[in-house]
Image (cartoon, rainbow, N blue to C red; front, side, top):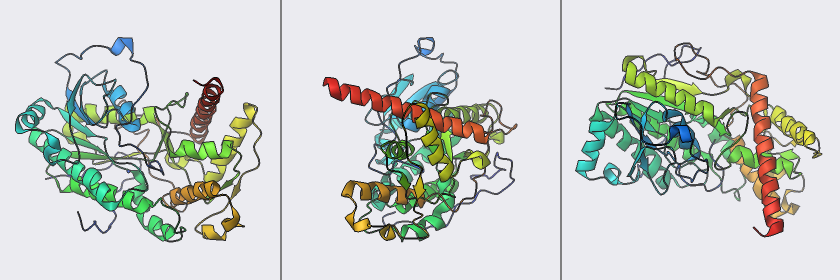
Length: 410
């Protein structure tokens, strides 16, 4: 049976899964339709990492290897592991081998021979695939996020190896998300509750399985440290783009914390956990918080950092303002009905995202734990803001490239 151990974070606390109703048909993601964690990445191959990993290297079975989160994990795993990607629609540039798989299909859509071969080869399973959006139906989330996780746990159990499951830190805010979500206007299509329910149900599936498992709870995933690079912009980049476009009002509480971590530090953490899983499975923590924790900026600090970084690049932005949709429903925004539809849509998406942020308390963090050799260092508030500045510069550069391309017709 699954066992619970002390989570790898400074605060000693048990693993808890919030109570939610599971759909009758029965991880911050992008607030609009987004591909599964199979989005096409664009990095170039590192010449020093080309070619097949030695067959003596431990084998990791990885889902979502071509997505925003999975690409960073695959990149971090590749130097020390033989990475076998259980891929969906798109290939991974970092995998050594690939096997077509479908999280929504029974037994991943694999025949018994392929399933048995994967189970025989695996030394650890990392599940980073899934559906990440705020406007999916409960049925679609159940099919991929819940049933797919259950199948990955079955594969890990059959292989007799540990499972590292990528969940979401925001499951901790389920109660607040329900209350705040009820205040959203009917025209807002983004409803994060269904997504969070699926992530909680997926954690339950892992806990109920016989696999030795570690649940990783990342917060908002941003671009890489220093560069802000990401193969696909996420919800945090949409917020940045909105501010850069001159919309100076944010439909969030200024006191709410926007916990964000760079993709590469999440990959580093998962690679370190995978090494423990192979070397000494008994030391694998049941729960790992991949969060900035107390270093996370408030939404007010976020907005001012975007303004200041843009100002250093020569772009003057207005002083940010806030409309907290919990204290006052979004329909109470001054002149709401007269606002352009595109602005109402943007503010509605922001308000929906704010429902997952909680009331301002910090997440725990496992970053900086001495118990995980090779894991990321704890973030300081200054580092968290500099990571944000890197993302702002990335968005500015990307926007500049898009504008130049539009002018030249390329």
